[in-house]
Image (cartoon, rainbow over all chains, first blue to last red; front, side, top):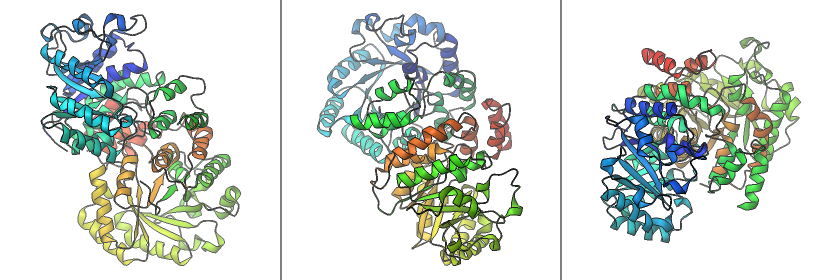
Amino acid sequence: MYKKEIKVLDCTVRDGGLMNNWQFSDDFVRAVYNACVQSGVDYMEIGYLSSAEAFDPKVVGPWKFCHDKDLRRIVGDNKTSLKLSAMADIGRINLDDIPHADDSVLDMVRVACYVHQVDKAVELAHHCMDKGYEVSINLMAVSKVNEHDLDEALVDIAKSRVPIFYAVDSFGSMFSESIQYLVRKYKDALPGKEIGIHAHNNMQLAMSNTITSIQEGCTMLDATMLGMGRGAGNCPLEILVAFLKNPKYRLLPILQTIQDHIHPLQSSIDWGYHIPYLITGALNEHPRSSLAWMDSERKNDFVAFMKEMHDYA
Amino acid sequence: MYKKEIKVLDCTVRDGGLMNNWQFSDDFVRAVYNACVQSGVDYMEIGYLSSAEAFDPKVVGPWKFCHDKDLRRIVGDNKTSLKLSAMADIGRINLDDIPHADDSVLDMVRVACYVHQVDKAVELAHHCMDKGYEVSINLMAVSKVNEHDLDEALVDIAKSRVPIFYAVDSFGSMFSESIQYLVRKYKDALPGKEIGIHAHNNMQLAMSNTITSIQEGCTMLDATMLGMGRGAGNCPLEILVAFLKNPKYRLLPILQTIQDHIHPLQSSIDWGYHIPYLITGALNEHPRSSLAWMDSERKNDFVAFMKEMHDYA
């Protein structure tokens, strides 16, 4: 499965932070950073770019904002081959709050959007490109988008200058055939652009969907250590690196950080494969109801959750 | 993914028993049985057929032997549409100890063998067929078998009367391309025979390898509740049933038994995705070293295990 174009992006802190409001210690973020540097991972997504008024800093940790001073406390000037990324949600960041890339330790901004926000996403993406960043657009929740709306969005993306576009299985509802269909559609509609994959693990298919995406020509691969991420989590970075057998990556530094920092968190944060996440994934529903269930006293009453979802679905 | 030929085989007790020496309570086995009956699963593999002298009954539970009296204590005369299976290992069962199918509540015997045992497996399989059982041969550890030996074995299987042959990913080292290659090889070499799939989850690919197998024409699908099985475990039955969306299967009875009986066991038995199992899977090694590691005080020292395996591999 060696392809030299492949780039791996660790988003442990960004996606994992959805489970704890980005309340990570500096030690934790530094350990993830060091593992990424030492393992040869290409990108680390360290959080979100958000404006101060969008979230309460008493509720969410610094990685929801990615202020340059917080980043540099961890990475210094990042004189390494690892590139740093932050995600930007439409409507959560004022353009004026985004520093020029020369004044930031970030290398990349990934713009996340829903299909009705594609025009805004292109505008934000172009703004970030003009400020000197590498940029992608990550279209979320595509498994719920009707084909006509998706085709229209792809026309807009094709016309844009944005060089990278992501296939995102937000609900963890897709499998090999649907991933293959989606990636082929993106490749066909977006000649010359790079395609990425961001998979969720509700049906334990995140790793295999990532493999399918590689086979279909995706070159930007998202993963997180021990699959840490919202709900069922993501494609596990350690499996991806073990699978790729690419000489530019090393597994041991990732295992060290998993052992010291990620695995211990599993006793207090319920990411990963759990039945409620399976149920929303299999039903192609947003994980919010399963996340709420897993936060409740009834988290292990799988039958009640299934019955509730069946009424709803 | 609807195919009417598909049959699902639950092997929770048989494969799960590898983790606790088949020391299940009758309540547990009965709950798995009831869930299989109520969910419309086609087969339940309730244990191994072994001769009394092969194992110490003080060490292993009754499901390592599958004496008819023990089976009937759980299933009565099994007047249901669920068929019952037991696995037989070469050298662990005397032919004379296998009752005629008319005198047994079992419907099927699955003969497990390594490649050098194929002739013995065919002999045992024919013996069981002649006694009135449905029979399969499950060739284990095929990911370590060289192509020439495998081709010779397939010639012998093709000449046999045994109607079902299993693709078994014993080490959890295979992915879509290798599964596709193997199943196509089996289909080509064994015209007219039914092919089954038994996958392990070391690289979180058991579910997707099962999907790939369906796409390639496998019709006997092994799975276990919550993936319970040796080491990283198996294809999770609840994901498979949720995925298949086949009207003959029902998810709720499976979730009920997972909730009441399987999930609680996870606090004391370490099946499922764990880093040591990933490491043996990625290295295409037998899980015995990872099982021993997970049983030791150092179970969470992933780096030490990786270093040890790298010296070994």
